[in-house]
Image 1 (tube, rainbow, N blue to C red):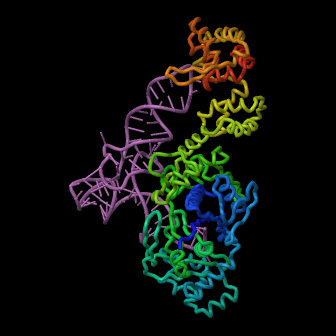
Image 2: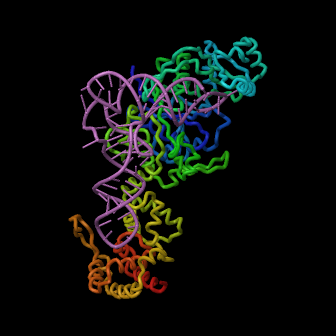
Image 3: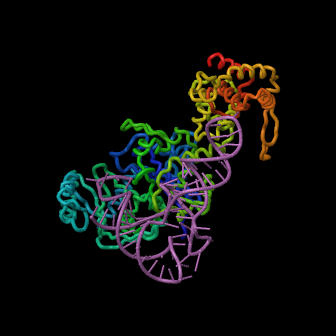
Length: 530
RNA sequence: GGUGCUAUCGUCUAGUGGCCUAGGACAACGGCCUCUCACGCCGUAAACCCCGGUUCGAGUCCGGGUAGCACUACCA
């Protein structure tokens, strides 16, 4: 019988959610949605020593921001900052599932698939010192302190006495274990290279990842395990566990995703690379309460969630053809595991910026204006323009930025008159005759009515494309021509008066927004100063 | 060291035996447009890891080598 597709994202609350983890969550989500399946989120907090406060909230908030919706398990409640748990297979935090694991550990003990071991971490460390290639397995387990060498009575007596112990999986040597991976095909590993993995530790009364992961995936009816490539070497162990439990018939299918690599050099992308190269490695800014560190996030850097999704989706997956801009809906429709690359992808932050640019340019000006408002507030600008004007301003400069905060550097002169004038621009564009030109220009512009000042009309450019022409252009250009001043000379000087530098949109777009009064005020001011 | 995975422009990738003189995108460079800076448009440079084999024909299949990465914890 065909089971409903069900995938899980199972992060560990040990800090901010790494961008590679975000991609794993995304691929799981895309796969689930495409197959009309269920996306489950479970928290794997089986290492009590690595728990970081706030990490769980962070993970759920990040997924919520990105639009990766959770159907079952833990998730951010709609519109709030509260975590909610939905589903019949809970609890969804492994630290709350102790009794469940007890039962299954016991089952493995009873069926002789596992045994108690009393070797302390120090003893194991000492053993590794003596024998550098030491592995706790069929060859060495009879030299160690465990219920196999001590006898079950002695083992139970030690436990009763309060000795710390672990439960280890007893792996039969010399068997080729076959794992079928949806991305890589069949992978075969000999069981002799596997060690007798610790499944449970009495120290904190918690299982390890391997046991918890298998038990939970089984109980939660997971059909596909889509996770990072770092798990591939332990996949055979997981297969063996499914078999030991007698669950091989409902064992999920595996897909191991390629890793996200450093932009330069080789190796896994790490938090350090972000710090070193100056880009975020996390979706949201994170304040680590445990070590006091602060990590920058994509959201705070001005990224749109759609852009992050699009960028990440293409880092490891690509459809046939040349399409690069994908909405979440398109990704859901087109995603497929067999088009996921097998090799790791270097993290190309520059391309990430380009994706954000694409989404920024597509956004309606009114929406961008709303997003820009907080930046203005931050700059302590008293906004005197109506929203439509701010939208117009943003529209004039948006195609030259990648991020909303960058808008400010491109349009600040609309909000504040130049306090100083750029030296380089001055040198190149402010000529000896400029003061005279500007004085004459003031006289000319003073004679323009308010209506004419703001008047424009549709026309065509030399290529026959639709264009807008400002009436002011019709007044100033003939004047420049008549006086033979040179368009570049006059207009650049004019621009410096208004902007303070040789940059910005077309000058009549600027004068329109500034208005006649402010425009003339700025030119007069420049004449005083320069 | 052992085991596994991987291998096309600097980067992300298309390519599933002839359509490949290897396509697209980012970045770089040049030009056009132009009152400036951008955008945009046009263009340039840039890759099949190596060696064998299979085949009429290999980037594509096979073998070997090399390199890179991952794993090798009472972490996930």
